[in-house]
Image (cartoon, rainbow, N blue to C red):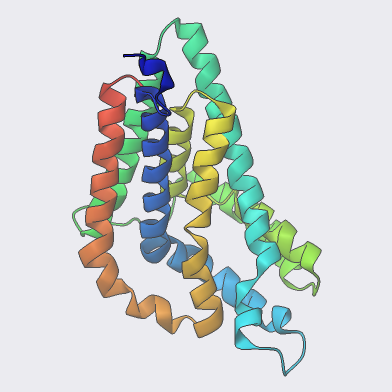
Length: 241
């Protein structure tokens, strides 16, 4: 039998599996993490996005330019991470190095899961480097929040896409494990897409929706994060995608 006619080989199945894993990671993380971290920035834009008093709540909360800005940053970071992984793979003359990146992503996702379960304390402040980076990004974001145009919203999304975030670090480590700029970009695009609905819900319904999700986050999100960590570890043991 000629197996060359198969549409998907093992490698492509692994690539789809990795992208699906980041898709699920973004969906779970958006409820437990992004809602708390990025929700205030979304709410700060809602009065500006509303424009006139009669604008619908839905249109005020969607903030399309802002999410496009975030998608731009995350996708470009994914391409850079995937490209870096590919260069590291060539330099190492083999695939095991990609497994290291995937293993790192699995560990970072597992840490997020353990934090969600309350098994690891959540630090009140970041490291000196992450705190400095966050402060610098906040200085850039502040004047953009005061502007009333779509370009400002887009640039705000681009800037906030660089906010230090453990969930983002895990996703980028996984993107580096693809060893491909294109696959890394696709993986991060999938990750970004699933962080949008929770933030749109906050923009439309207010901060209270995030509070109501906390119980869901404890019972559902942490196990999903652990499962995704296990999936990445399987890929890591296999040496890459």
